Length: 483
Image 1 (spheres, rainbow, N blue to C red):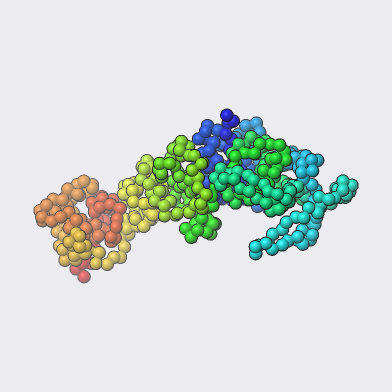
Image 2 (cartoon, rainbow, N blue to C red; image 1 turned 90 degrees about the horizontal axis):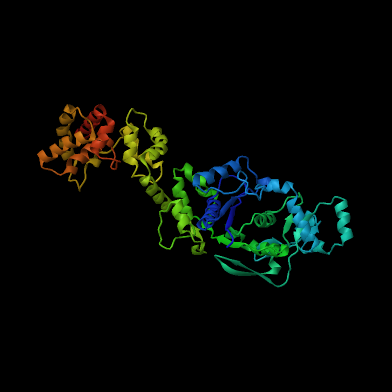
């Protein structure tokens, strides 16, 4: 059996879009599920779209997501160069295009911009340009003369304009198109660089790629790819086209969404492992419907035959839930390393930041959530005394005032402000009064935090605030209730 070889072939045009990350992930999983090779190839021949530093982003993203390539620009596996501009410099693409010209499967086109613009026509309300094969009829003498004079040219694929072409995709099945729709696509541009489509076919063949994974926007180009493989007499790879990714409104996920790239999500406080897990489920699901999976589990379970044809919805709410699950399961030291910057944004007071981190770890979905949970540790917010009234706890302003006045001297006399000691102290008061725990803890916690929801109980909060600040806030609560 032929060893499976897949590739990720991004263009260095900026941050890695979620769709590109999914392509890389699926290509990686397909290869690794079968013990195959995963290659990285940089497609940088579109110089107009090249962004400085984007290659570093590609390397960094693959490393952080764990999608480690077996071959690439930095890991020569014997079929390099793995950067298209370096391959272009060797003349490899032009040589292959000329082979097709010799066999009448491609031809020189010298048509200028004005003539090409005149070929534009409107079909189904869309403006399209279909080349009319004008230069296919040029004699060899005319071609040689034009070349000798240095007349600008492109090289076009000579596609039939009658009959049909059928190709197979593993997700979408057999697809047949009319050859009249194929157009004679450009293989070599006027600047001597290959088009994306042509370079892809040449590189995939020479690198031994067995499975081509890409977005379904390339479905319409596949017949042209197949025509090239057939023209060269090469074996056609297995095609795996991924479904479209949409936002919650079922529109194509765009940069305007604010979470369309991997780096966007990391900056928003998401965990890399959660992003990978979530992206894996954008168009695929395992047979057992398990949702939380490590990269190793994804490798073991991934079967591209279970991919969907339907568009995958980027459900931001689900991603946040999944991220919360990863944070809950995270080692505390790793969590604190990630959370510390968010805690320090809010807390300037001299308190135990690690204890605060311990309180919020199971209560957040993304790291920035930390700030709204802990801001009261820095400063008691202005709050309404209606917060002291809680039907379930059977508390109101009057009962809360009594509790705070009763516990104040106990807290002033208390020296040990550890959580356990404070809890024991207030529990003794609860028992003496013959009331339920919440009857006492609710007003105390309200006075300490000024919030209805806190990441921790009254005694945990006091342990962090310390005796002086705790007493100050209890007195403040009494004053508010008395007023």
